[in-house]
Amino acid sequence: NAQEPTLVLQTGHLDAKENESSVNSIQFSPDNKFILTGARDGQVKLWHAETGKLVYTLSADNYSANAAFAGNGEYIITGGSSSLKGWKTVTGQLLYEIKAADFAFMDYHLSPDGKYLAAWKDDKLLILAVGNGKMIDSAAADGSSGESVMADFAATGPKIFFIRDNKVIER
Image (cartoon, rainbow, N blue to C red):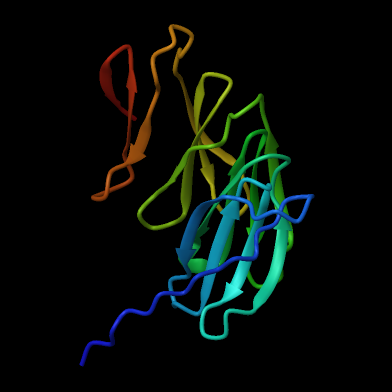
C-alpha cells in the first residue's frame, strides 16, 4: 500500500538582513527521517522531516552552500564558493575542511555507495574518502582553456569518468 507524497515546504533560510535566501539543494536522509537544505546564505540546515523542526544549522561557507548526505546518511558533505566540508550527521561536528579558490566546490559528486567524493580543486580532480577527507586519487584536468570539466562515478563499480579536452577519460 503506497503512501501518497507530501509536500514539505521549508522557509527557514534567512540572510543577514533577515530576508529569505535562495535554497540551492534539498535532500531527504536515506531513512527519510531528516531533510537537508543548503542555501545561498552559506548555511546548511538539518530538519526533522515529520515535524518540520530545525535540528541544527551548519555554517558551511561564506557565500553559497550545497549539501548532501553520504555514507548511508552517516555524513553530510557541504560544498560552496571556497570550501568543501565533511560533517558527522548525528552531532553536526566538523570532521574536515578543504579550502580552495573562488567557486571551487559548487559542484561535487558522490559515489553510488556514498563512500567516495569527486571534486575539482586547482585544475585537479580529487577522489576523497567521505568519512575523513583523505585523498584517495587525483588526476590533472586542465580547465584553463575555458572548457567545462565534469566528472561522475559509474553506477556499476569503482570507476570515475571525467571530460578533458572534449574526451571522456576513465580513471
